[in-house]
Amino acid sequence: MSTKQQSKDDARTYLAHVATELATANDNMHAAVVDAVAAGVPQSEVARIVGVNRATVYRWLKESGYIG
Image 1 (cartoon, rainbow, N blue to C red):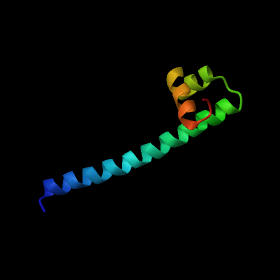
Image 2 (image 1 turned 90 degrees about the horizontal axis):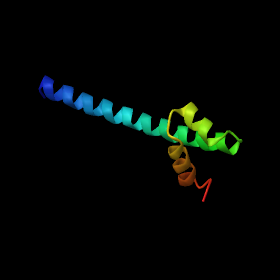
Image 3 (image 1 turned 45 degrees about the vertical axis):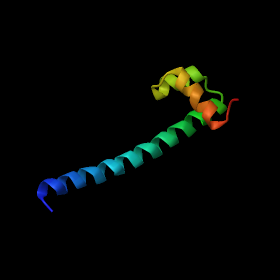
Image 4 (image 1 turned 60 degrees about the horizontal axis):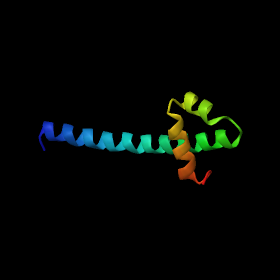
């Protein structure tokens, strides 16, 4: 295998690894958002702390089943 091909394969492997870690972190953040809102922290404050739009927090709450 050429050095260039090996570099491409290494990059693909690394990218897949990072994508998996990001997906896990994203799931953890969604759960933390739901937990914070369930504990009484206002959605707007949760959104500000996490750095997302309030509509995103609302969508995550709906996706989790926390709100109908």
